[in-house]
Image 1 (cartoon, rainbow, N blue to C red):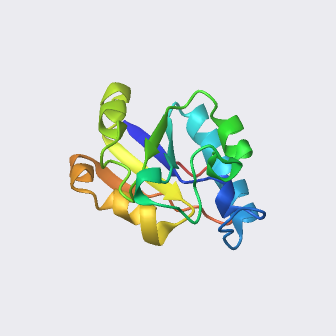
Image 2 (cartoon, rainbow, N blue to C red):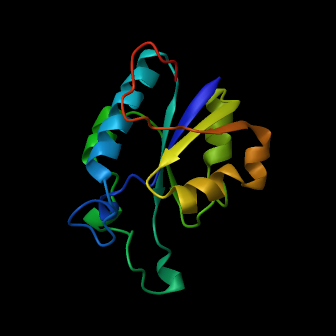
Amino acid sequence: MRGILLIDLQNDYYPGGKFPLWNTGPVTERILVAMALARESGIPLVHIQHLANPAAGPAPFFERGTVGAEIHPQILAAAPDAPVIIKEYADSFYQTKLQSTLLELGVTELLVCGMMTQNCVTHTAISPTAENYQVKFWRIVARPCRRCSI
């Protein structure tokens, strides 16, 4: 069974956040469409939320207890019942409950997406634990269509 990891879709990456990225609006719109298609198909969604470890010193963003560290409200509203995995490292499997959550959901194939493909998305995809899954980058296309399978 497929499962979708929604990695670090958090407020600090959006306008007004501490580390706003380029083009978050259109990317979010495409992710929301794809999330709806996944839910219609019974594909489980899993939120991944990066929170800075306060013991490691001050963080530039994703500080615990801040609005910036929260999952973007549109993303959370589109999958309010999806599990939320908290991580402190780029690899979403490292020292988290992601592996056990995926086992509970019966997931064997991972589709991964997020705001920082070159960082946490990639680190999750190449994690030693990810070797237990078929991993695919979830390409968010400019014009998703209902005929396309997720």
